[in-house]
Image (cartoon, rainbow, N blue to C red):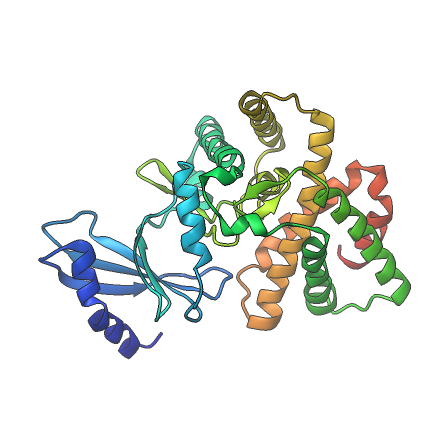
Length: 343
């Protein structure tokens, strides 16, 4: 955004700031924040005010105005009812496609974890899993309201769309390879079989991007961002996003302990025993799909948008995929083809 545009926004929304913050607003400063892989833009608005602290809010600018109900607001209201720590929404300019939100700071879990000891990391990840169980169990309760995510599902079509996206942008695009027709048909067949298993699982509300760049830590407290694409799917989906995170690689022993923590608490809350072997298989299968989808996105960012930022996240993500492919004999056919074209 040009400097003139920033000045225009300052002037245009000054009166809204006064309504949100109160009288006595002075020294308003607008700063563009580093974006993510989406087409939304974010700005921090800082100001001086004797009547309100903290003295900053976030402005989220949508790619284009939205005529219908905004999924971000719908999901935020639903998660808030379920006691999930999502940022407050102060104002929504529907005509311009701009939201004013609580400022959750600059410290992501990805950054915060780098300077913490193992016990502290484990403690916080357990808190994050507690919130995940809240999202999935309380959040899946339709009596709490009509969430837009209830009508969306990780079905075979959606899961396969993500995997075809990976083939197009990672194998054909970034790697510049051609797949012969027989191999392509066979690969898609194996991937479809994987998606059928995943789509047949019990459905829970999923945040969808539940990873270390969307979890903020401010003054020791958690905030969860980027939830507008929430949809129904296996409970392992968000757990895989968190524990097989492309941005933050956790020790395998910690991952095992956190999966057990999740299962034990899920059993306690729902009052039903969980087959750990089956749960772990679905978790690993879900991780493969989720990680393949992620490298497709990373490749797309480079090939279509010239964004090199995510290339460094491809190797650890491929390592997740490799380890899980090695674990299951049932995946030997898929492993052979992915080793041929992806690794």
